[in-house]
Structure formats: structure tokens, C-alpha cells
Amino acid sequence: MKYQKISVADAKKLMAESQPMVLDCRDVKDYQTGHLQDALHVHEGLKESLIKRGDKQRGLLIYCYYGHASEHLAEFFGDFGFKAVYSLEGGYSRWKENQQNA
Image 1 (spheres, rainbow, N blue to C red):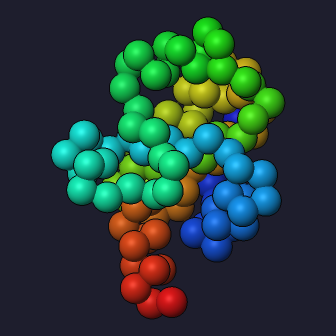
Image 2 (image 1 turned 90 degrees about the vertical axis):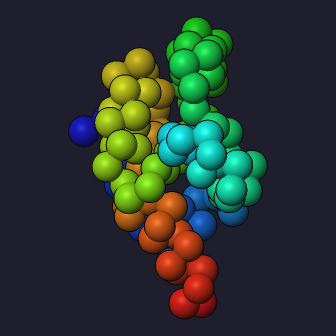
Image 3 (image 1 turned 30 degrees about the horizontal axis):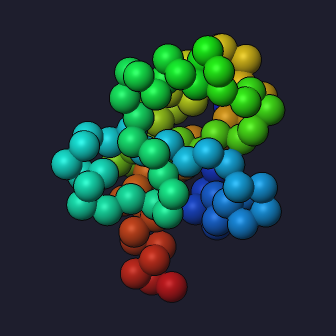
């Protein structure tokens, strides 16, 4: 596997310690409604730019609604040589749930 699935707790730790690039692969409307801090909305232009000019050593933390689409995108970036790719288990919904229960 060219990426790792990580929990919300591990994602928070990763974000605090190594500042990965955070990618939101939900639709634009949901991204505009709310997203993780500093997250970029994924679109074809961004994917192309990252593949051509992205720092493949920098971590990528990818999330979607429930954690399924982000796995496919994480695998995609892993296939293009990114070394530290993570998919958020449970996606944005788990993140929000965790925030409410904190």
C-alpha cells in the first residue's frame, strides 16, 4: 500500500508535528461550508500541479466525506511517487464528530 489510513487523533498529531499539505476532495459547496484548517480543495488543476511540481517528500493528508474517495486519491498520489500519503479514516464526518465529542 502506498498510503496509510490514519485516525483523527493521528491526523491531528501529524498536522501539529509535520504540517502536511491537507487536501479536501469533497465537492466545492461542502468545502466552502467548512473544511480543515489550511485545507486545499482538490480539483484537476491542483492534482496536475502537484504531480508536476509538488514536493513529493512533503506529507499529504487527504480527506473526503466518509474516508472512501480519499483512499483512491491517496493511492493515486502514492502511485506518482509521493512518499508520505495519508487518508483520514471516517473522513470529514468523523473529524466533526470527534470535535463535538471533545
